[in-house]
Length: 394
Image (tube, rainbow, N blue to C red; front, side, top):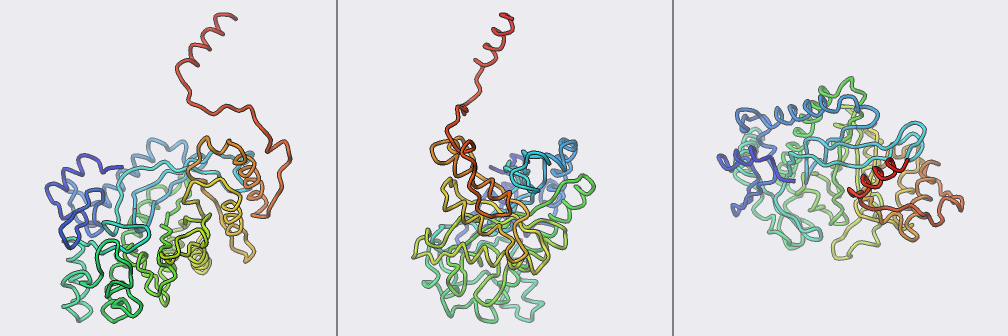
């Protein structure tokens, strides 16, 4: 989803309001979070514009807020968005699973991210730009090391490099030095500040509407088994083998009364490429522990289009409150007519019933998972013609 044309016009007037890497390549899809409090959008700050957008949405859909629509702030890191709209197709009598709504996402606009490019299996680079660099320079002076604020790390490598091929992310790399820790604290701190500003605005705007706010946090599991967690670091999460990057995020959510919504709930380590050192299972476990420690509600969603029993079983295992802390809600993403095909429907019915039992495996009744005559297709103008013909005949 591109930025609105009038915002793109502002980026042409001042190209530095978008992220720019060391080689000068710019990303026109996102506004730099370094501009949060600067009037770079026709005399208004990005936070003010985000707030206007949320107020407009509240005014237009006010009668639906709190029972059909709940509001989600999307993706702290690679995509940090103004607002998601979560449409709930459930009520107290017919819910996706007991006490938790079945929800689907309608993506809106204004996305911000903390880096410019990525290969899902390999390494990324830092992309700051003029406004972020000004913040870095000020932080370096305050820390008594003006030389640390000249630029992003020079040894962070290039796009699509493995962490061990760089000076910054390798096992005993710069990330673990005084300078590296300073830079990562500053970098992740800017993301947290931005997130808190957006959440504060959303909290004020939607207060009293009955809408439940949730914030989506990206599940970046690539290189999780390495010491530096390079993928997470470049996305803005200061999460390494020795530093918990998700507890501060969870505390921010808890302070604002926002549900922490995390992804990749269906993924297993054994399904990932070995050379990428992935571990979605350990990542989900860490985020779950962080949410519990911070006193934040935790919701989840699937990352990929999956209809198999193994994926559903993984979600069930994560959702269970065996340790007195389970999921408060689950978003079933990428649902389409394939869910009604073959064994997919049987697996889905079993999954829904099991979720309604708190994550305990339930075998559905035969009538719930046998062949159905339900037709899933596109509604065409022919339907209107048929209805008129039936009315005339009557």
